[in-house]
Image 1: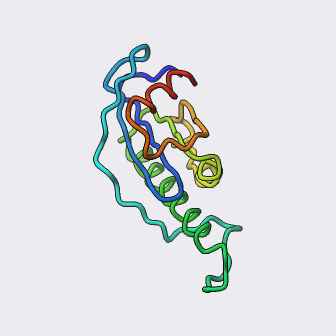
Image 2 (image 1 turned 30 degrees about the horizontal axis):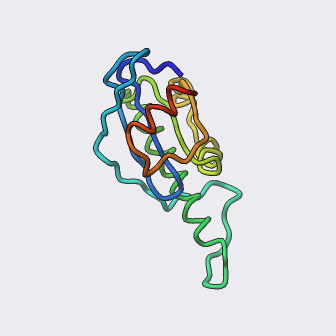
Length: 134
């Protein structure tokens, strides 16, 4: 996958988000970690609402879905505000599916690629290799 200079790479799972920026060019990806962002995980996408109780085994999944929706909301706001011009989302398959439900048109317009892999907690080099191979 070719990543233009200054492309933002969002690496997420249901609990963690890491943002990177490509300081290299399309041919030579050089990622730099960006400051972490505050995620509002209280949002749960429509259809994913069910009552929480200690007997509900889906509480952790509900929390992960809420976090995924919160990540999409953060990226939407940055896209709408012009802070992101090109974006690649790397996320665990379920997280990516939840995020897609909340993509704003402005976010979809700047999205240059998606990678359905869980690379949270992986090294910068692992992420760069996965993006180069995609």
